[in-house]
Length: 272
Ligand SMILES: [Zn+2]
Image (cartoon, rainbow, N blue to C red):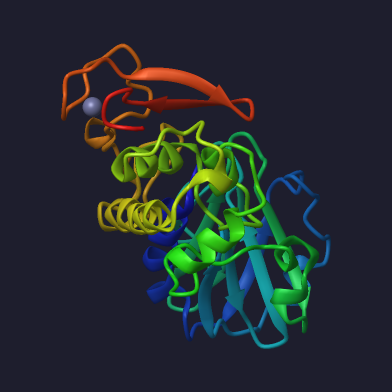
């Protein structure tokens, strides 16, 4: 599943091709994504210019003349820049044809992604975006925020940091890796974290996500970078899916547990 670093990498990859260009045509080859693509998407978008490409959580927002196009890559989606003449691949569901012979295609084998037009709306008030917590890489997500947020919450800290109301974009891989970096066991009750440990966790989340963005996103088998190459950086993961293998730091065997129906991985010696 594309996580925040993959989506941010995608944003940075597509933005230079889209910004300032007019949409000439939209081809919907299969409208059946998570929600059906509106039948009038092409007529709405044609002739509009794209002014900005931003990201909120794992949503991409393409600001056009009269509204915003909201894209989500779902479980297996990717966006690729090509030319309109290039042959379609299986699972290329939507093509946006832009000026200067540029095409952007949405490829999504499992079709959990979405393409929604927000007409004139301020995107922050859209139901999909309205309840979201802070962006992990922005300054508002800091130790004071996390300490305050965790006080009354006794659920495992790993479950909490994966909830979008607390902070957006911390998926299972990055939650496990951040908790390892911070030396905190994933099952620790959130409310029991000291302010110093909250500060370490915030720093770890930012560090892990920034490192993944710098590498062009981590590793997921369905993820394809905007240049069409698979990103594979799994060897750099410290704990995720390494249960039974020795910790890179202390050689204890990495353990696996389940929190909130999701697998967690941790080192019993490095994390307390
Ligand atoms: Zn260890």
